[in-house]
Image (cartoon, rainbow, N blue to C red; front, top):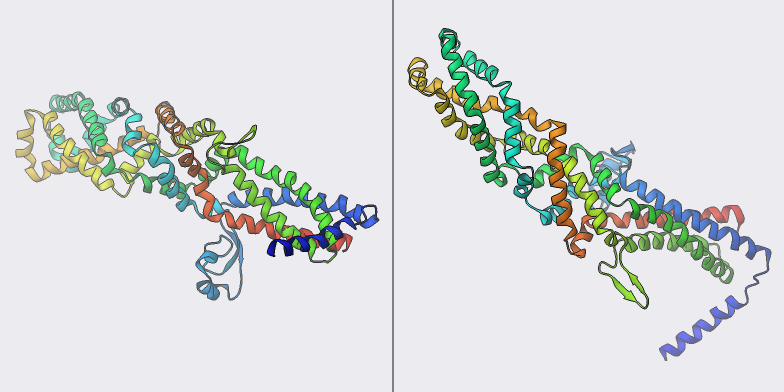
Length: 446
């Protein structure tokens, strides 16, 4: 009975469509203007949706009276929309910059963690070459560092030492320097997981440089974002033709705005879905379907690896994290434990005399100062030429690992960063579609 009733309900609708006068002036105007409107609005919807993803970097808006009091009462899903702030402002901030800490966290969990650990990245930087580079940098400054420490901690002793004794001490320190630095880089490699929290390092970097997250996602998804914009037009035009016949069959003023809502929503939904799904190739007759992003896994892997190696997991950032990150106290403790015996060895026979002359406590202070002052050589970490050279190995490693990721895990690389906020883009399309329907009514009437 249900099937029969449904079939009977279709008959009047079909009869109405058949009764449409396709030669009337109003129908012909609608046939030209409505598809044009839906195509243009489809394009503008997706274009502006892409803009909304990335811009502006910082929140721009105006303060609205009463919004600050209303904010705590709003649902959590509304509070996190980057259009309002807890201090009562209404405006906009790009979805990606507003979620940069969450997206950085997701990037680590869903992508980098599957590619390798911080230990893997550190060993790709070639600790032995890093040690040689640090030695080359330190050799030119080590004499001044030792002299500064001695003059600060015990100026009279350093002043009274004969020049020959000073030179002997400095020569021994210079001879010991390569082995000291190599022991330090080896110790860092053995304890890197305790010295660096990779997730916090990546999050903090992107919080300080939100434009880099924008740049990375734009570059990785460059073709897909362009497809999404163009798809709005290609899908909007044929849907507009369908809407023409619906408007002719159901000539009420609200049909066009409601049709615009549906088209605007569906345009964004289908555009994003086609980028990421299906994850695995699916064959339908002679055609094979797969998400556009999945098809470019090798190319995207290379782009992602280059940006990670150049901007995020590079020698300069690793050095800054070791010396200034939340676990830097562990780095300094390790440096002191490594440098202390090295200083004793460098002083050689003079060690006992120095201890007697200045006291054990002050002698220990001098040894600790050597470890602290050694961090001045961290400028070697920011050597651009050396950084680029070491980054090439990290890039090759990341690209190779990402190319081997299963499609489902690879899909999460970009999808997970925007999935929770996709609904904003869908609603955005629906609102613009509704506005386009009203605009058409205002210009051409019902």
